[in-house]
Image (cartoon, helix red, strand yellow):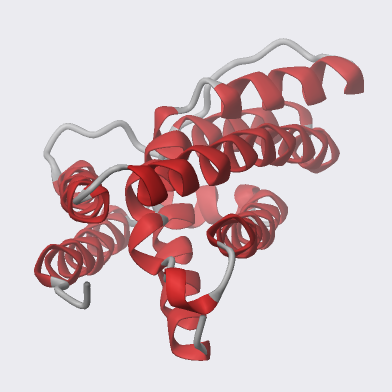
Length: 209
């Protein structure tokens, strides 16, 4: 894999991390309810769950690309459709405010970790990303597809870890800032939707194989 490919995948991983989903909603709610430490413990659990999904996807995607004709194109178009769906989720009217407080009971660390892991394991956003978006960045000519999958998955998990940790540490301040500034929230949603839509288009027209 080239540096350009890795950077492009990292940029796409940032887009995934910045798109609201079950993991992000849980982490923000937990942080606002129980504090930053609880949010970080929950984050470790979430990333443990994502790692399990990534390992399974790396094995499954590798097998599919090697054994099934046209699997690349099927997965590529599926990934484009998934990114387009994420773009719509970012801009659709009536979406629930990301930083709206959601009351949650105080939990011990072990339960925070377990709940975070379960949230990630049951999160369709993470699973679909690995199955639909990972394959177009894998190249049989560059070596083992399995190890490429692990490398790309590691980038995604690293990006998510840094992004979510920063979000947790700044959740209180961001929530206070956005509560009285709905225009900023709208701008963030439309910028993210446009970026994801562009990535969906680029993936759909990719014909390098």
